[in-house]
Length: 194
Image (cartoon, rainbow, N blue to C red):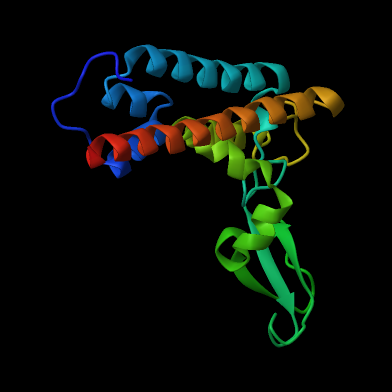
């Protein structure tokens, strides 16, 4: 039940988009301000706590390795469909002998890359906030001296259970936001049907 009645209900797709862009915004469009603040604050707090516990590097970004390098796929032989072996390398790493570069792994093998980093699917449900934090994670993963790949990183990756807790908190925040997206757009559809 809305806190304040709205004159004409917004479209469910608009409510879903708003809820993805900013957690709780879908409820705000429906006039359910108390629910919007409660849901939005809870989800954002859980995501931020995950980053505080595991560090920004708890976000594993598809298409990039642990050192912030773009992952490029390569093949040996005729083509990948013919059963030729393939692999991944960082964009600054040398190509193996007899191999041919295919391209960025997100473009050439997107399902394989998402399968290797499944938590990123849940984390992206936070919306542009996660995209910004993913960019930040890639930037701080790169060596402090680009000419020396063995130089220290700006931010070290957390270890063991600490990293797992950070990943879990951020992924649960994303899943909770997905539930909020579904619920708020469903409520918008019910208001529209009346």
